[in-house]
Length: 315
Image (cartoon, rainbow, N blue to C red; front, side):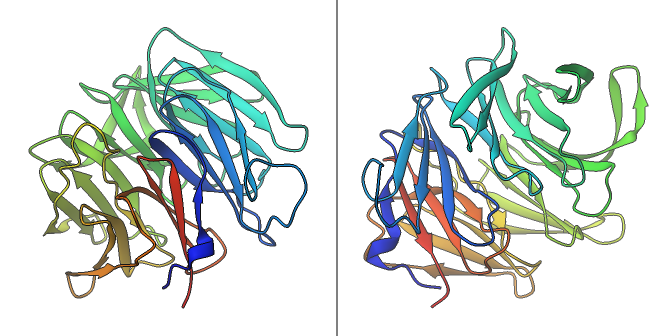
C-alpha cells in the first residue's frame, strides 16, 4: 500500500472522531465527523464545481462531538450521525438535508446498523444499548449491558443475532439478541482488559474478534466458541488531545490496522502475530481513526486530530 501526495486532504478543523467510506462502487467518498459537530465529505474523484477545497464539503448538523457515522450498504445516501449532545441525525445526501430523528438527555457514544437490516439503528447511551426502529420512528428495545459507556457496537457479518460491544468498564462482550430477558441480554463471551476498551470488531468472516484497550494491548479471540485468545502489545497511550486508537480489520481475516504514535500505520498480521509499519513522508500527524473501503480492496482512510484524512491505496 502507498500514500500519494494528492491523497491527503484537510477535511475539517479540529479533531476527527469518526471516519467512514460511503459505500459507492463507482467513486470514493469519505465522511468524517469532528469534535465541533461538523460533518465533512471528501469526494476523492471530484473534478470541479462547487465545494470547499478540492472536493471537500462541510455541514454543521451538531453542536458537540460526533461520536459515530453509520451508512448501510443498501442505502449509501442515507447517513446517520450520533453525537455527545444526545442527538441522532439523518442526512439525505441526494437532497443535502438533515433531520433529527432522536434526542435524549445523555451523550451517545456509539452508533451501528446491522449488515442484514437497514431499518434499525443500535446506539450506546451510557452503558445501555438501544434499538431505534426507523419504520416507526421510536426506540423499540433497550438493554443494560455495561457499567460504563459503550464505545463501539459491531454486528457479526454472518450470524444476524450476534454483536459485540466495547466499554470503558474494561470489557468487550459478545451478545445474542435471542437470549433476552426483560432489559438484559446473556453475555456469551467476555474479553477482560485492565483499562478501558476502545473498540471490539468482528473480522470479515466473523471467525475472529479484535479488541483495542488503553492497557496497551490488542487482543484477538477466535475458534468455534471464541475460546482461543492471543495478545499483541501496542502503545495505545494517545493522551487527551488525540482520538483513541481503534484497530480495524482490512478486507479479510489476515490483518488489523491501527495508529502509531510515530506518525505511521501499524499492521498486525494475525497469522504471524507480528506488527509491521506503513510509513510515508506525507503523513505529518498521528493517524487515529481508520476505515476500510467496503468494495475497493487496499483503500484505507486514516483521520487525525488536526482534521486531515490520508487515503492509502494499493501500490
